[in-house]
Length: 336
Image 1 (cartoon, helix red, strand yellow):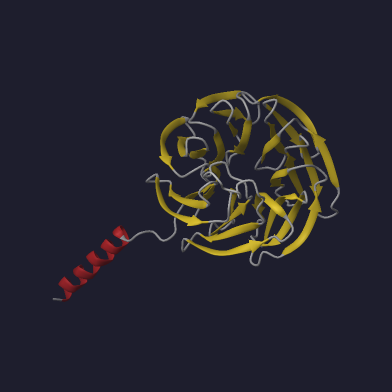
Image 2 (cartoon, rainbow, N blue to C red):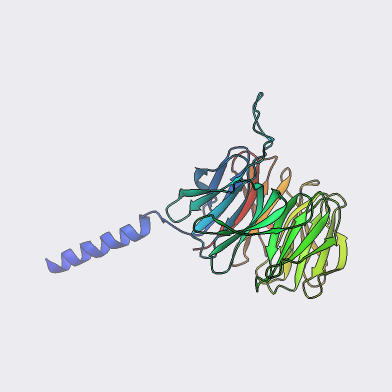
């Protein structure tokens, strides 16, 4: 009898472990601007797990280093709206904080007089969140637990949009779309250096070793490479498509993936030789791009197709697409 009871308990435990839903696992998080939602996607089944409400016009999403929290910038402007909507062109002033473990909205940070929050990145220890704001044009340092604004650095340029930080967290690099520039901000002194890049500079990425920053200017379809040692532009070259919008390095630093929404393409570059390795045709208006922490898969939002595209990095094979929501934009990877 004891043996039968033991066997029963073992089978029960195995069944629970096998069939119980995972409360927290690797997740792709996608903002849908015109739905005011954050979609949580299972990268293995390629299905939407659930959608959570955000503020109006969410544009970007950043994930904490431990993968437990997502921060959504409610920029406030969105593209798809019903007749008579008077809110679609108004700037937002909040950040939605999402608990990815329990899959629920945790809180909302109110930025007060700082409007148009957009690009974000979290500190290595997860204690700070750095956010760009369009008005006034600045980088905000927030306490990631409370949302309290701890420090403000002015970018001295117009429409400050996306941000990256060096691995030692001593410098910020911010793209300014109207000014066509990158602001280099010293975290300690607040000193700002302006680099003239190209018209509509928006997308930006930093190499894992922190030696290079790549910036994309949409209007002239070029990529500029900035040396972080000298804070000068080393070289520039065509993006391989039209309207380069976002970019990201693979975790090993070997490749850079670029979305080109004006030509419905994703281009892949060798990060060292700058050689164009591949040119992928995607759905309408590819926008955000994120690469899994193991470098195996890329995830691209397609704003005008309302889709998320799944791509195998090694083969550059498109594995599938998923109807994700209206006007998807920012996308990020959350690793357990």
